[in-house]
Image (cartoon, rainbow, N blue to C red):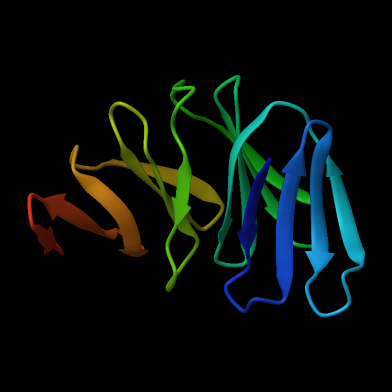
Length: 137
């Protein structure tokens, strides 16, 4: 089971074996359901919900359940999506070769990230871990 909150904290995205539910945090009611199988990771990235499948597909959805697009993603069954907390929709895909995924007007720009990338900050910037230090490029 995977979960993530929207930036404003109003919705909770919760993935199970048959799909993803978008739950209103205040009322506990399910607002939308997206039928999708094989969700490996999810992230609330900006104004979108991003779903990474075990088959190597990144699916972008609106918070009303509409599918906005699908994009190829490198296969890595241990990787996770970590959403940027400010700026446009972006997330770090923590694969063996990590990449920063950025929504560029409906297309996904896949930018190389360094092996010690920890989390995206905004857009094309991310925090790196170097021994006892955190580095922001």
